[in-house]
Image (cartoon, rainbow, N blue to C red):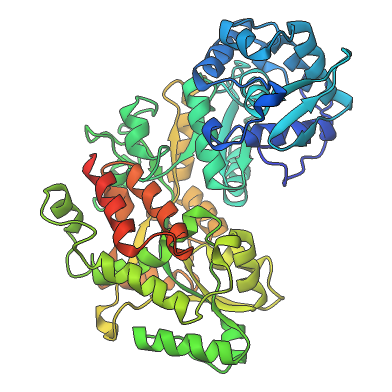
Length: 549
């Protein structure tokens, strides 16, 4: 197993590549920074026009990638293979370089070998042997990295039938499954890349799929919530059909809609089930002399009591955009989808909208929690890692989060700290409280995998009792398929209980008609907390996105 990180935070030790080349950590870290920057759409970055920086728009990046695939340069693990990318001559490339010759570009990129680039203001500056430096836009160099130097891209282009290429967001659970798969299949090697956050992973995977450099197996999202979800990927023909696999009949009918394509063909293996509720640091709650709330009024009182004890009631990290949706999902499971499980169908029929429903109440309650001091200061300036640190160290007593938060917060906690979960109430009747539960982690196989049989074999392992237990345990989640090897802990007990009682509701975004609805929701919550927009404006934006179908 040779992991290669996509992000600079994860340091990869030097190790011997198969051709005898030894990776150099310093230049690779700088290349990883460039690669991470490529995950940000070009239009979202500030560009210094006065520097005449080279910018490659997406179609040009794809042409570069195609050229490199034809010449075979992308197989080299050495950063020096980037030299060959400079030989690609494209009219759009030449027009943007303002006369920088291919030789200068080649020399500029070689600085990564021993003289890492200087990154400043969104621009990578690589000194050349010319009098003036060549300033190259991040997207340009990153495109070359993606197309020219990924040893794991292209679905295992080495042609080795015992090598599987793989990518995921979040390393620990995937690595646990990979280790178990390799142990069960001697001689097989999984070459994996990992991203530490969902946004950059989704953007990078989409770029790789478009360029034809995606690995054999990759993580996808259930339903239709974002661009790397089952529905948009299968609509584009990017996922391998899995309906003939032996485990296909084991997928529960309640789960199948979010892992099938438009024709009802299974195209993803569900690996975990997750819920959203109040995750508690048990020792911190006990030390504060408090008990966990069961009603909405209890929640507001709990916030006041936590504040009096010098603690934050609920850590909130809205800087990580995906976190923004968790509190509304927890509330609407009770106030919207509890009494009306078919609410989304009614929206699709044009009979109701977000703005004319109890979504109004849920978003207003979100602001009420903020105004009551339930959250830490400046939630928009706090990210997921800081949120988990606060929860793990007991500075915050809880967090409204997915079930894996307990396992993630544990790494910041003192030895002996335990975590539990309770449903987050939206009303003053505990009997009305529902728990949002959904398929969490899903994996798909590349429709153009270079090693399709090994890809299916790995997917089959993830669907097995052992694979489900290994992955779910490492992820702090429940398995999505039956597993006799899995034992549920206190955080996951609520999922089993509420499913058995018929009080579990799916995450709403998995059935939304397009990905833009969720994008409007995530961005809108951040604006809402900045008082830039009102609840009405947020819901109207979501309605407009929903109406696009």
